Image 1 (cartoon, helix red, strand yellow):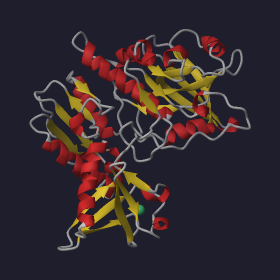
Image 2 (image 1 turned 90 degrees about the vertical axis):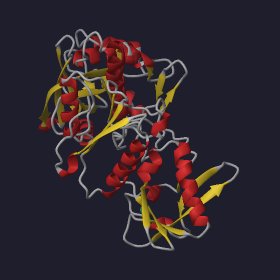
Image 3 (image 1 turned 90 degrees about the horizontal axis):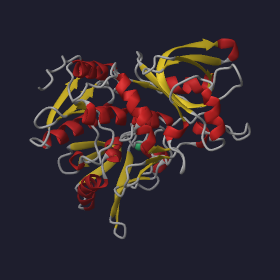
Image 4 (image 1 turned 180 degrees about the vertical axis):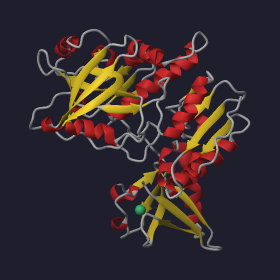
Length: 412
Ligand SMILES: [Zn+2]
């Protein structure tokens, strides 16, 4: 939840609504266009603005700062303390059109991604400094409802797997349709080299790729104090050890089929499983580990559980799994977009899929959340309207799974 802005015409009392998360996801030019129109109407006293996070009237206002050429949506004076805890404006003062949004990711012109994680996710901390795992929500790269200057481990794992799937689809699928093994090979040999955990360390350098679990010890020694070893495997199963307040995690390397055993403190596992919105596996698990001594299983200091479909595509709901499984069964060229920068016409929005083997390419959206989630459905409508406006450059296929609608036939 992050809230809804209502714009009421003072003439005929018609209302328009925008979810703050829509505004926050749009790129700055699209945001500017919308905010300019709101600003103009407000300036001419044609509309009034309110936040709908609470039933009480919370007045909003919009300002334009000329030096910055930017618009700022804010609470009116004396209104800022009125917002609900779930509202964007509970903690933030404004939504601005010049979104230099810091999300902990930077990409250079050679295609290297620097990810800035919270230190406790990838480094051992002294007991005094150690904190509970961060409670930032598992946002995908495009969803920028909550702004934070750090990336979460969930984002890192999702990015790694999604990017690898997309590379397999774009470059290798003519030879052989990608499976989970191809995706892991891509992660181990290509994608992990392009991600920098610190200025001098790539994820590939600290990644446990294969062999005996004891070699994690050497990784830990080699990069001491810079970053702990990183493990990414397919989850087999886990068992809770109630008395020790920890979990034992069994995981598999899908390339070699080797099985490994790890442990995770209760709060690390709890944090990972709370962030997952899909109840059934398969799951990829990823995180940084530390050694617990000779003969003992390494322990996760941070952990993320990523639901995937059977071929290794990250999915966010069982409906998405159904669609992706079918697309993979039919060996369709389906990409899972994760960044919008290559698709300027999407205005910063990121769809659930892009079918490359139709002419034109088809945008795929799967809407699964119940209609009681007003914000989600405002955003749904916004997306459908926008993607429809892109015809004939793109086709649109979407499934309203939330109301039990039958899945439409996928375009061929
Ligand atoms: Zn509010």
